[in-house]
Amino acid sequence: MNFQRKRDFMKDFFPVLHTAALFSGISDEELSAMLSCLGARIETFPKGSRLLRAGDAVEAVGLVLAGSALIVQEDTWGNRNILSKAMPGQTFAEVFACAPGAVLNVSVEAESAVTVMFLHIRRVLSVCPSACSHHSRIIRNLLGELAEKNLRLNEKLTHMSQRTTRAKLMSYFSAEAQRRGGYEFDIPFSRQQLADYLGVERSGLSVELGKMRDEGLLDFHKSHFLLKVPED
Image 1: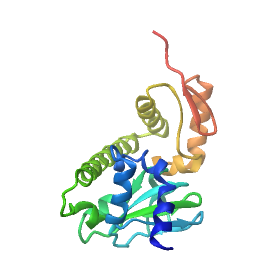
Image 2 (image 1 turned 30 degrees about the vertical axis):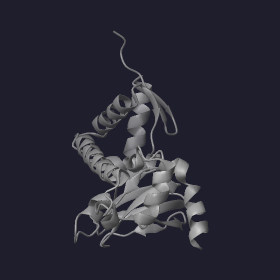
Image 3 (image 1 turned 135 degrees about the vertical axis):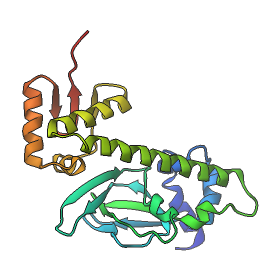
């Protein structure tokens, strides 16, 4: 692909890039200049494939352009723990890429067919000779993303530290309601994925959700939930 065709291909994804926190406050003109400077490359992966594997050393930040990817931790016996899900406009592997010599202790897998832009971390963190303002901005944006990921991880640890499946579900749903600013929302996980995220058995999770619905605590259809709280 020649340079002009590559630039035109990149521009097809500008609407998604503008939704990404990493490129917040950056114009089309600045994006065009930055992507080459940052060593951007685009790859597409089929559903179920591994984008990155535990044990890999990474030198690039991944940003989902289309589809979705799961960040998964697995033990020697194949037990899965879903840490998070990356949707269009969201990044992954930035923590490991920013730590020199670090290797992944997670894998990234394509939940669906997924298209990803990879950005070379050294080019992201090294301000170009002209010290352009948009490059400084992306570094600030990356720092904000790292802080947000840390908060989300702490939130997940709070959910998983609860003693029962019901308490884990209530902790998770309460956090989602607070984040969305309302009691009705969609979650990004299937039942199995939610069980893997909270560290519980799927059968027990499904039973507990049914009990909570019967007790009038919530209602749901697939991944859509409505929390029912006592009226004052």
